[in-house]
Amino acid sequence: MNNNWTREETIIAFNVYCKIPFKRSSKAHPLVVKYAHIIGRSPSALNMKIGNIGRLDPDLKRQGISGLTHGAKEELEVWNEFYNNPERLAYESERLIAQFAGKAIEDTSDISLKDLPLGEEREAVIKQRVNQSFFRAAVTSSYNFRCCISGIQNEKIVEACHIIEWSQDVANRTNPHNGLCLNPFFHKAYDKLLLSITPDFHIVISDSLIENTDCLATRDYLSQLNGTKITLPDRFPPKKDLLALHHDKYLQSL
Image (cartoon, rainbow, N blue to C red; front, side, top):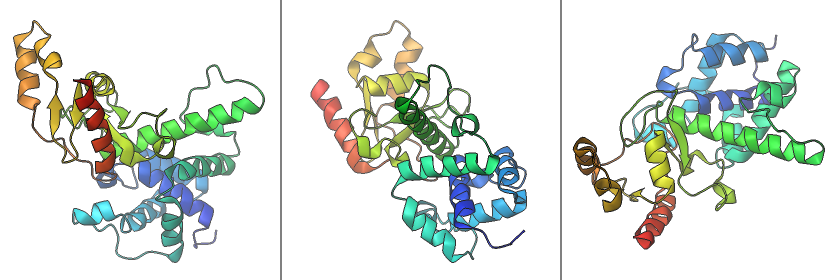
């Protein structure tokens, strides 16, 4: 096949870049193998393309992670087109994956097929679920599947938490910068304004959450976390202005 990557293949590579912890990307990674097969490339070639895309990421650069040193013009063009438009990237890349695989998007995306409506509403629901799935994968992989408060690292239980709720900020629904990786307990507490994270990344836990427990060990644990800093992700760090909006709501709820 032609060794030159097409725009469509590069968009799919960007999708995979967002779904895998950058430091874990390799030619043997299951997702690299899976998507390389779909687009008809070798896993080594796709992994190299992911490295090329990584060289463009300002969040990696700030950590001294440079990705590969050389790349193609197509990568920069795709990056500039989609980096600040994650909702478009999510659906367009998943649509292309389905097209390359010769299947329907609901069959190739990691989305629930339960209760899908019929007619025009079906497409809207599928798009919403595709975007939600992309957001979850991009956020949790950026934090290396580690809860940024507790430090628990388990891909099976951590969740992608919106800083500003899905229903309240349409523009940032799919934006990984609007996400935190949390375990279910802290996710629920964050949504219910029982804890917050300041714009300078400090954890603030309400007195009611700390004190309303009969377990001394739990109380001590929450007290020790209070005022410490979260673990930041390798990519897509939480936007400070969004954290500030949530923190203001938290303070108003006290």
